[in-house]
Image (cartoon, rainbow, N blue to C red):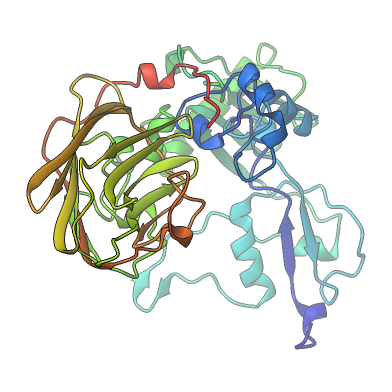
Length: 447
């Protein structure tokens, strides 16, 4: 506006990145991070804490039934990329200089991959094949700029695949074929991918309401073959229907900037470090140690914290005692505290976590606290966050919502001095079996 260029600025407002989320499960949940880790809440617990919902102590999510209602008239919800309820949303275009009939509607079928070529088109720029000598990935989208001027512009021939957690579909020239493989709130008993039943919807069935697969088996077979071709061309294969596990790149097999790195040294001032910026210690034995100085009046606050109020862990000093706190999805808070307060002076403090043997993710383990190599405390952690911490990693403070319930200093700012903090993964067996107990429905205890 200040530049006087608003009328000649193209604004594209996409009404959502997908359908409404059913990740709250049938009952909804008080802590959505728990649900993303595969742990679901109960109606009884939610009702007991109803007055807290919407407040600072809650990370609440509505029940799946509301997601279905919000996605009407389409079928299904977020995560179910096979059906329009999981993917289809509207878009608003604002460009007074380029759109003459403001307030009108276009019913052209477009995909988000069309946005980039549209912007280049209206700017009069070619799609680049190389940037600074680096070959660019192919662009599959097409510009929809011509629809701005003429609502009668013919629909382009479009082919677009969809896939998420094994839910898959294909759109081609108005036809859509799709199969729902898994349901967002059901964790166990997934069918074999080859047993999934495909549906078929015709060009006039914009809400996918009338399955005509039995009437046009040849058309369905054609689209199924097209899906496989597009899936191969876009590196979708092999299909992977794991869900919570895929938050962990080490389990999912995704590229990871720290893959293979088992050690890192961090320093004061390092805050808001993202998950991929520090070694992934979940489901592994590990050691965290730090060189600190305790002043005469005693130290207090956070040495290092990872996560937030709803999941994570922190090494900190409480009332002069070295303390390790593991926040298990705001359901349980485990603490291991040193036998005596830390004396003043320079020390190397640490905790070692030895994960329990056995199958499954989110296993507990033994925590051992040391000061200058001497064990000064130990304790058992029954279970740990398996796949996802919400929040960042902070050295010398906890600038998020607070992994531990309280700190002696504001935001846990460390009273004393920190030279460095080391994070090391200790070699040993990692969890490889499907999660068992951690994914059972639990009652989230009142904190």
